[in-house]
Length: 462
Image (tube, rainbow, N blue to C red):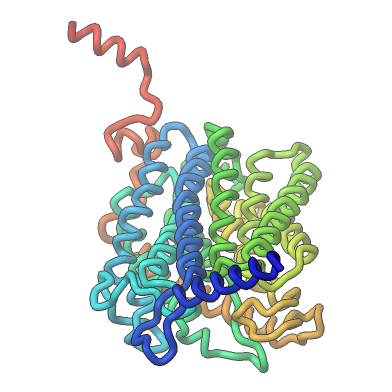
């Protein structure tokens, strides 16, 4: 009898609690967010913080794989991506991507987040503040990808212009066409519509193509190729930086991919598992391949293998099984090695392998959905969409079409930007500046100032 009474009391308590967080039918004029709505917004915010921390990872990887005389410049560029990139996205980029006005090509309205209640949480959704925060750190990531391919020879002022335009216009248009419900989102090939869960194509391939165009218009670093066109190794100065950066990026990816679920639900963890499996599979395959090709397990290449797997799984992470995640990551691990060697052969000097990791493996991630998608990831609208699950070639065709459209857009727009910069304020530093290093000449300080110089200076002032 006592247990039954406790169950009744407990049940009444649950009813009271339910009524306390649920709008009353017939009386409520506005939606009152539930505890779950607040949890969703809080989780996406935390995921955004992890993505923002990836800026530190990118900076360390790039600095570690380049020379000591440019380390200040490397960190300055990565910091500027966050500063001017997010400001540009705040001013116009967010409106171009998600603005309520405009059309299929570009959004409009809500410039500087004006004219909208950024705190209000809509029913079953995220507040504008949460969405902006999460998308702004994605924009900063997209432009940072290009920094590594343009390292050690780019004018800082020109890089600032590129970073601003990338986050203000080039990247937001891609977002509007896809996640913003624009042109690509309205397309279909047979029964297939586009899918890119967290941005293998939208973020990483976009950044990778920009990196390719930057490296092309800059030309190779002095001494990178001999008189016969054969690539020379220019070793990075700090492998611990590089490895630490890879691990920071790896941790950040658990915000990048699971955060893109945009809900605090059971699928967050399944996306995280797929992300982890793809990364370790890629690292393993890269280790084997580079060991066979070069005769040594090159740590820099293995680190890029990890990143290649993470980039590749970013698009299909909500649609594939863990086993297929391992396969997708493994292919990316082999692909990144071949791609790095290929771009060296055609004299595209990419000091950190950004084009291969983000551009090539980003495209592979988008294509892999057409092959291996088993589950509806909230974009596909159906299960078993992949070719290997009986979905036919429609999804593969749609994914390829998406790659083509984004590729053409980013290639044309970034080429225009770099060409204009090259013929106006200049894109590349002088040969003398490049040989001496960019730290002191571009920023007035050195990354590793000598203690002996400081001591001598101090003694002279006494």
